Length: 334
Image (cartoon, rainbow, N blue to C red; front, top):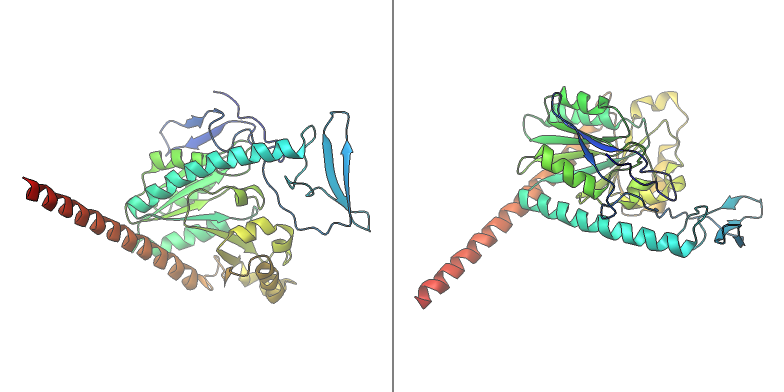
């Protein structure tokens, strides 16, 4: 079993990626072949910082390292075409690596998206920082939806099967992907997981990504939507600190609102910051613990499943019509 090469920017990917199967079944590991997305790569981390002064220094390694400094002396390494800094690498090389890796990842994501469309699966990618309450949210959602919808879950973490075990306790099928030192799921990992999990046709697939508000923003898994979960215990300025993630999401769940009476958290300011980054962002306020606001979230999921099912039905009908048309043409020529 080989180790996956380390990311040049965030250090992710060093270690084994394991797909943990159900208890009693063997584990699977993903090798570090260069063709696999997410392994041995540099990420694009865009930062919307003000830049008063830009500098390019040539270090002993012979590469230029660009950063900017404000009048207060703060340093920002989001300067340059790669919008990131990595010792020993030029901006142009980082950018080429990023483009190559994301192109491969996007090809895998397109395969996943076709599979979801063919099977009528509504796939949702939940992203957040650690401790936002994603797993509790999923458990409560499954407990409410399981009688009406078929639901499966893919869990992403660096280690342990704790979250997948919590999901399995609800009766829903769940598969754990452990990324080792990797800080996100990628489309290739998800494709392997689908081969093992086999979500049912016309079902809901909930993907809980690794807790990280940076790298998962750049990696399309083939999902219908990214949903960013932000808890009120984290601070209302998170959307400004991690803009890529909130810009990539279609829905923000502001979780743990039952704790608002005990916190200094400005809900309106948080929503304003989020929409400053992403004006099209839909925001729902929920508490996975108390159940407050959950019905709006569940309705959003139900609607997505219904639309995916309808679109699959339309494709099947179109295919049947085309087959009938070809059969008629062949009969006329006979």
